[in-house]
Image (tube, one colour):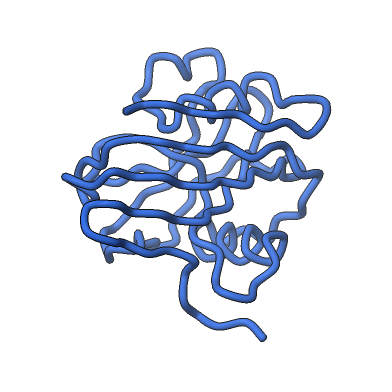
Length: 162
């Protein structure tokens, strides 16, 4: 049975989250989310709810954040993401387990849906040119690699930013 609670917890200064990410490509562009508070880009996606299948979570999150009814092409990888929190997670020692899915190609159009982070901050969706992804602050850095060259087979990556 699925609940509405994210698989996330905080214990002292330690923060953990189970998250899904969507790699969404349209021609020479990839879609990323941006938070004015955190001041960096990240993949469209979010927390998996307790009891929710990851495939259902990525479809739910992409719909909530973009208003687009996208389809999954295939699972890409798991990223073990270690970082020190900034912005809304300032001061926290963070560990996120992120399961990424490649979505079927989407039509590049302006996303006007109002989307919010887990902390209630407004986030905007932006199409970024794949050839210039290194020019943007995208976190985790592994997301840049996934958009530029999605792995052929399922892989496990460790993103260490502590």
